[in-house]
Image 1: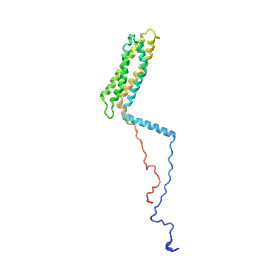
Image 2: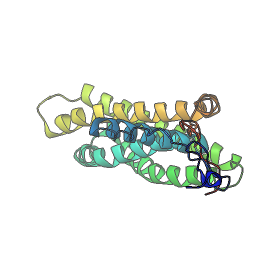
Image 3: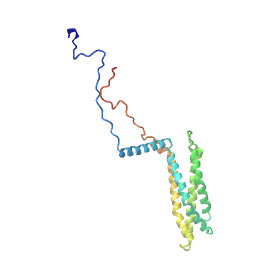
Image 4: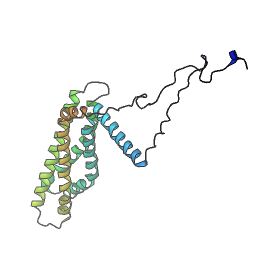
Length: 222
């Protein structure tokens, strides 16, 4: 072989790109079922918190709805006491009071929804109306409780059907009074806890695409 045709082993042609070997990163481990469940629960609570940030009044609305449902469930017991005490002089106004509470229990939810229209400022008129309705229901419940208590105290027999019906209805009235009072307090404190809810961090932290990359990157042309 001629001397000018000698090929150097360590010489690399200019037009050939230098390949770099990237270290193989380990495949990401698939999260376990427990981790998936935990992250799912965490995400569910995060979404609920975001919803409360947008509509914190839903807490008061939920309590009012619970009060309405509770009263509808106990309405049979109250009506039974009113029916059996029809001829008793101490429970004359109980029937009309229960009727008023039944009507306002439904109207208060409608007024509450109108008090916070979508994409508009709260309606002051309906906010005041909600408080007026809650106060009227509390007044009617208190009148019913006082009259039923007087009826029990003036009955000669504690085994009569009227005594049993009235005595059964009294605890339910107390429960409704407690729920209405709690609803009014929570509604009144809406500006306070809405600020506290807005301070909760609900941001989702996203990892950068290049944050976890390691090794050399081949940017040369083939």
